[in-house]
Image 1 (cartoon, one colour):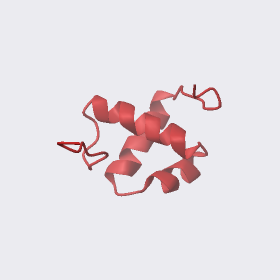
Image 2 (cartoon, rainbow, N blue to C red):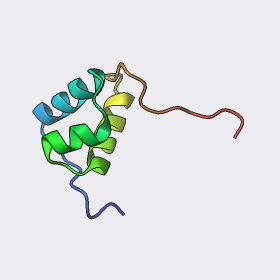
Image 3 (cartoon, rainbow, N blue to C red):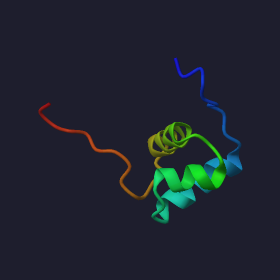
Image 4 (cartoon, helix red, strand yellow):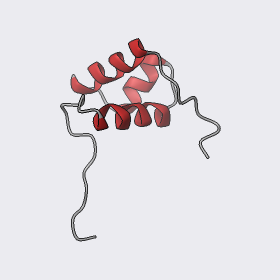
Length: 65
């Protein structure tokens, strides 16, 4: 599962992804800028969100589904 993705991120790249997201960039824009697959950026944002580093909404949980 996910064997086609690179799941490791240097700290500076995680910081850049987080900064770009919090400044309003979308996932594809960030992926293009840092030359990573959008799915890899998604996983980095998911990781940063779990650590409380994302200020802008990233994902929503649907209640009652």
